Image (cartoon, rainbow, N blue to C red; front, side):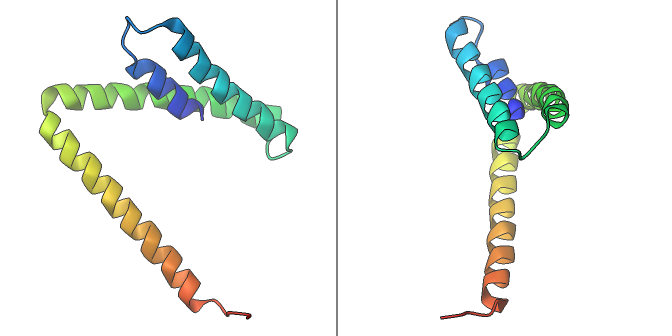
Length: 105
């Protein structure tokens, strides 16, 4: 969640209000706390995830910005190609699992 939050905060223009940026980061922190409360993760895991997610989110935004400025059309086609390829792989993998499972009716 910190990966996405920091990516969104980085992409918001400087003239956008601080309130929206804070709200996004608070939402990410809330999800992190809930993961500890629900005993899915420990505080140490959440801390490492927050640091790594924030750093990678910032780096991902920077790479996207550089690619967009150099060739916006290539970035658009690359993003859609990656999205469609990943979706096709996800669907076929899950459909294969679904088709091979025993059905108990």
